[in-house]
Amino acid sequence: MANENKINILTFFMNYDWYKKYLLPGFIAQSVLVAGGYGTGRELVEYFVQYGPTGGLMGMGLTAVLWAVLFALSFEFARVFKAYDYRTFFEKLIGKGWVIYEASFIVLLFLIMGVVGAASGSILRDTFNLPPIIGSGIFLIMVAYLTYSGSKLIEIVMSWWSYLLYAVYFCLLFITITKFGGSISANFAADIVKPGWQMGGFKYAFYNIAVVSTILFSLNYIKTRREAIISGVVASLICIAPALMFHMVMSGFYPDVLGMEIPINGIVAKLGVKFLLAAWLITLFGTMIETGVGFFHSINERINSTLVAKRGTGMSNLARGAVGTVLAAIGLIISNFGLIALIAKGYGTISWIFFILQGVALCTIGVYKIYEHGKASK
Image (cartoon, rainbow, N blue to C red; front, top):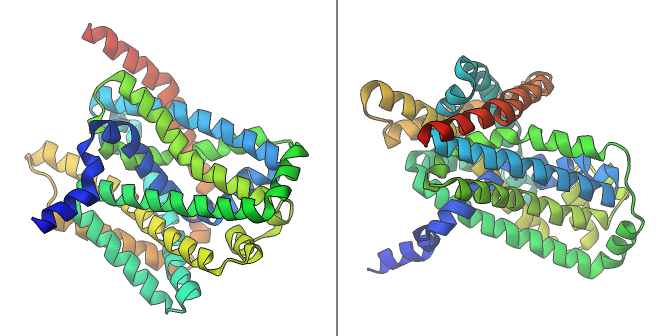
């Protein structure tokens, strides 16, 4: 009974339909997004902060609007065609072109895992002076366990880690406002808007749109078009909120923050609150695990749907864990052999592929197919 009560306390939110429909997809998307460059602040400087405090804010507004449209369309397309894995989704959307999408998705996966794999070892080394192999080992074990456990546990873990993430971001913002509130106000009052903020917001929105493929498994709770649209808009707000808080923080250190290689380290050093960096890095380490789990679980769901279609039974938990372990191990190997730079050379091209096959296709072919399906259903 005690154990059952403990489980209920940890999973109570999963008993509410509104949570699973409107909040869960956003929390999962955020869990996959906030790792690496987003979490350290480097990406945010590159795509937003460099255009000035006000310019960056405007860029984030554009990203949020684009995400809201793309999420809402994706959620509705998945609902209409019951496409809860990326192969089914893109077969329905672009036919045989799904093969090109999958190849690009896998290259993206290994690029991200190479970066995350390297960072997972260095974070615990820099925070607790542990050998990098310890961090990489914990990363590998947690990814294997969560992919083995399947969708339900992944949904719960990603929800809880999102709560922790918000708490840490809010704490950082509160301390910064307390100590550097005057600088934040002055920099926003200066109304600095540098040319290019529109492209920064546009590129960041599509640079990350592949995250949709990692949350398809959680969309089966959505039953109506209204729910899909609301859930998509809410997901956009959930994903942009941490970036908005971090942008506010970095605006207090503008323009010095532009020259910081790892903004979070420089900012925490200026704040003089030592425990905050450890809390931040532990939270970031968890998001790296979640990023791996999100991508690997999407691969598992794609394999599972194919197996169900061919033989009537899906993957065992052991097979799911094995796939997660192998993919995570490959990511760690890539991080150690310097292949990241090689893959990264083609990353600009891959981003354009996502823009065309996912963004453009969804806003044209996707809208048309949703409309035609609605007509046929009447």
